[in-house]
Amino acid sequence: MVNNKQSFLDLLLNDSSFINWAKECNQNDMEFWTTWIKNNPNKAEEVYNAKSIITGITFKKEPITQEKIDLELQTVLRLIEKKEQERNEVIPLKRNFFRKTKNWIYACSAAAAILLFFIFSNGITQINSSETIHKTGFGEIIDLKLPDGTSVVLNGNSEIKYSKGNPRNIELKGEAYFKVKPIPSTKAKFWVNTKDLRVEVYGTQFHVNTRKMKTDVLLDEGSVHLILDNGRTKEMVPGELVSFSKAHNAISHEKVTKELSYSIWRDGTYVFNNTSLEEVMINLKQAYGVNIEFNDEKLKKLVLTGGIPNQNLKICLSAIEKSTGTKIVQKDNTLKLFKNQ
Amino acid sequence: MSSSFEKSIWHLFVEGDMNAFSTLFKTYYSSLHNYGLKISGDHKLTEDCLQSFFVYLHENRKKLGNIVNIKSYFFVSFRRSLLKALKRARNFSSYDKLIENSNAFVFSNEDILVEQEFINIRAKVLAKLLNTLSTRERETVYLKYYSELSTKEIAEVMNVKYQSVQNTLQKAFYKLRNHAELQEIKRILQIN
Picture 1 (cartoon, rainbow over the protein chains, first blue to last red):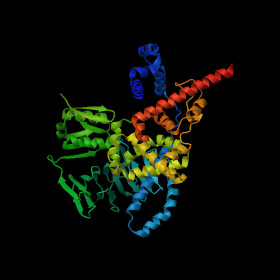
Picture 2 (picture 1 turned 90 degrees about the vertical axis):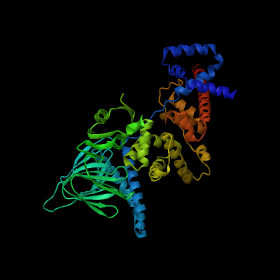
Picture 3 (picture 1 turned 90 degrees about the horizontal axis):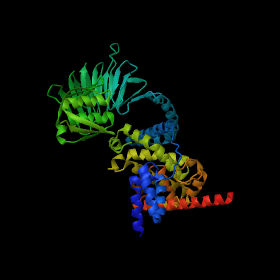
Picture 4 (picture 1 turned 120 degrees about the horizontal axis):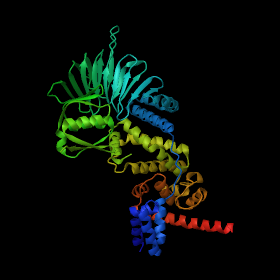
């Protein structure tokens, strides 16, 4: 008996016509159910109960303000950073130092978080006014001029960080294109640090990508000195592409030729050469935060060569469609690739 | 947030992408904050717990494995760590006792929108009626209508069967409607 009762309630709660009646939004359904209840008075109790479950209770919602959420986020990010630093400390003496100063750090981070919030709105973050961070969200590209005159184009979902005292020594996560301004009088060097390696230059143009468990550096102009995380060094001349993965301790150093497969990004354009469609889509996934689905495995193997503008996902997708003969359908945040018949 | 988008964000988060982490934080902070406050009634404890919860998530992201429903995962996991913190702070022996003996999910007229489709009663009366339900019933009602979780998701969060959530809801509304009718009758009698 109980079981029957249960399944009847379930039926009602999942019946779209019944839901329409409960919400009083479809004339036909309303007439149907009014008649039905008249003819089945013994079920009225359950019907009205089901109705009240559907209409439910309307709560007043007071969401937390955006400001408060941003503030809390900064605090949490700071805590995570502290944790990772502490874990990396091996010398016990230093560890004690960290413990003692922990409370002080927490107090400071609250103050810093407030400061951060005010500056964060234009994409720049300053920590204790000694560190500057530029960060892009998914699908966002920014053009930056560093204090020394170097220009940086930061692709989506990427970040650069440098201390105020030394804007020519920066840390990069993600993907960026650099035009380093040479300072001939002092021959001042410029460094880009990634998790895998360090790029050392005087004045030149190059592209760095740290996604995919490795760092790619492509040199367009000038000369570059690389210091790999394993201690080895490399010199690069224009037109060369170096990939190094610390995790796999694997390096490749090649001249960019017509045969070589690569994908680079500069001036808001992806340049692909003999790149598989699968890899092209991985680039988009990382820059725009989209999900990729291939309707046909064979499509992954299609090869793309040429420049694809990426200021905007729509234009980018239509360029890919045209050059590969595919159809890309966007649903929510998933891109589905089909063969164009 | 659509679920496939969430999944790709989750995937990036597990790989260590801090932008993805921030996106998840911004998506869930408000609703978890509200939920935690309804359980504990304590602003500071809720916020401290949220901070350490997100730090913990980041630290252990590689061990989390494949998560089917991200929304209910956030609720389950945060509920667990909040209860742990409450247990420490208030010296309770078991989680069930903790929730039942506390003022968890007590509603006030400020929680409730004046216009209700459900029954023609004032917010104050409805709040009172809601508070006559058991804690478990109140939490179910809260998760369903405030946090907008599906019945399946509520079952996961409260670690019970789907059918049991359905039963609890049914019982709760049966009580509410009976009480509401009684109130209405009382009101009419008083007026006359």
